[in-house]
Length: 235
Image (cartoon, rainbow, N blue to C red; front, side):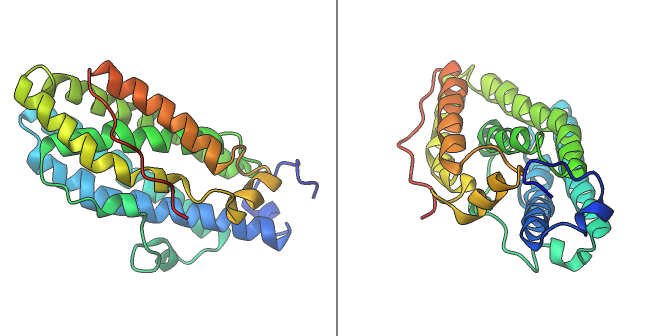
């Protein structure tokens, strides 16, 4: 297989070089694990925090879709031959962004505003993936991720109508944003180099982080708020 070729099915994937197969497995496992864990620690608990029936309804939709993303990635993984137990938080440690302790509605809205924006960048990259089942899954997932980020923007905007709400949202941004640079991985990552070599991903971790920083400043600035100084990505 040339490094630019497309792989159309899981059966074709089984015939590809080991480096390519392992790289695809890593991405599928990571998404399956983190979609599940995020739904468990952020989205489902947020239903209780939502302030009214309308907000609870939309939060239920977000939680349902995040669990659905796990199901889709797990099903793709199983079709690839990955045991289901390898695609759970019990087998692989989730991302550090989920270590943030969720206690308030404003915190959840900020998580959707910023973490789902970060996920949009990742899904955009996978939407050009050389492994077509993963490309198609990313494209199927994108409208829902965009809805989740819009959910965050809309409810943060609503909260910012009052001075107390504005302070609460800014405080949540200040405390949650430092978790996010590590979401994009280490600079000069060997994994990312392999992903780009095989056309699985298109952009370096550094490029994606820079893009995220620009977009995050824009969405937070639209609220009349500011980002705190960014911590470096994981070294």
